[in-house]
Image (cartoon, rainbow, N blue to C red; front, side):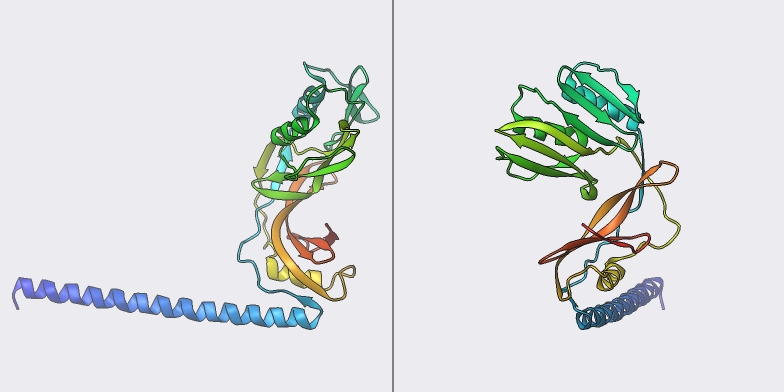
Length: 262
């Protein structure tokens, strides 16, 4: 056999080998996908037998935990937003207090804050939107509020922080008070040594939650964060799953499996 013929044979062998490997991988993927679908089907049936009906499981993985720091800088920034200029805070009862006229801003070391006696001449809706944009909160699309409270959730990397929110109190079309919890500007993802609970484990934990509705038709399962403060005062964004039904909502901690009302 000449060199050209030998080369042709080698190419054919390589092509056949690649085709065999691709077919093997495709078959393996098909089997794994079939096993995954069967496992999902079995889980959904098990959940339904326990009173929790779900149409499908999310395929996304939960996010990594995030370590937070930098509340000292955040306090001055928040006070300056409401008071203007470069206000100086005084420490009292474990919190920083800033004041200008009737307006007072109080901020604790864990980011819990309140603003009272607001006298801003700025359009209240514009002020709310500007605050949320600067400090990482998501407002409802409609802000047509003359009286009552509007609630906004903190957002990190596009995911809501369920227990970190701010409320805006309106009276006669004016913004009177603001209160809630701030997220610091310095955030560092932290590796978790264990396995984070996925949507399947979260739904199983939700099934045994004593406060869930007796017959719970799950309408949405989505990723989120929970803000947690350790014994040493360090704060962390903990990954969680938000599970919504027609009558209630809950969050499942991806680290501990603990279920809490949303």
